[in-house]
Image (cartoon, rainbow, N blue to C red; front, top):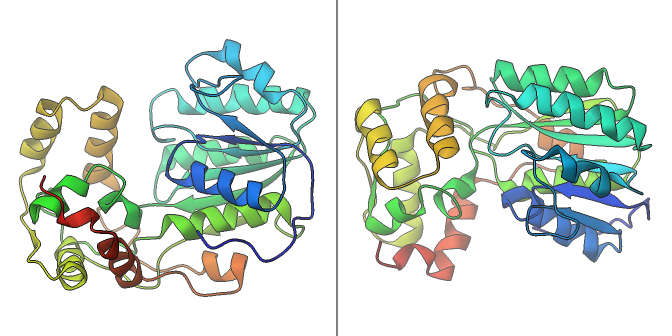
Length: 284
């Protein structure tokens, strides 16, 4: 993530939930670079935070005035809206002034959670995103790229993959600068790509042949289950491939430009940067 050049407009304590995840660790690093006090919200932190254990919440909220809310694994999960409602209620009692929620594009359940935050009486910013570039380098699909075959369900719908660095930078600006309260930033990359086109971009970046090999949805889910993936990850992948890639998100938005005053990062730039690290040349 590019280090912010604008001095933070706050020295108030920020709680970053999902602090070890794709967006959270980038946000923590950037806030620390800015000199903003940060409390890491994760099961491994002290005090610890666990979405499934409400007894951990209040201690994490003590002294906090701004929060980045990242519900794992996804706001579409059953029970997410109940958890968000209770957490936001406690945040209000604790005196929190600003909530920044990472939400999901095209997910009715996620939009229900947005409504809870918006009706909380606390200043809010929504960052609404879908498929990340980094799914191919930090997520479930990295071994597929290493093996030279992206074996995912047969989907021809294009997706405007967004870079996690952009998402994190939007969140950091919302947490540290004025002018972002009451804003909903729906963020995408600058162009849409099918999975076949993603494979072509990865092939160009790596100098290897990386193919897209579509498989039936049921077979994909069975394979994920056989790999020993956690049940919540299995549920999320099943949901996302069965619903969100049906074309509902097949359009570009200007959220990154509005929040940061610059265009979003292109998938090709991301692919070249990761390829240069040698990550994708490793044997699967």
